[in-house]
Length: 126
Image (cartoon, rainbow, N blue to C red; front, side):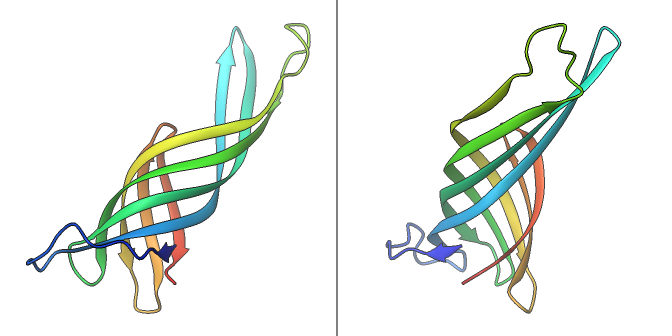
């Protein structure tokens, strides 16, 4: 996450805000069961997003974020009698809301909710 030079929206408060650009990658895995057939979908997506960080304290921040990425995915355990094994590659977008806790070494623990459900992660502040 890299801070952007955009004026804060919140002024005159102990709460402070900052806009940031974030780079990362999401790895998603979904499992399915359909008529006794078990298969799964795995997706990898490098992403870039813009977030509005609202710092409630020096260590705790909440944020909304919008991001774009390029998703690449594949099925495992797919029964080829249904059809050929499908794959996917393409631009994807996401809107999420999350929270972060900054530890003393600037390592951050985070939780995020978006289109794919709940995500947990670790990040670094620059």
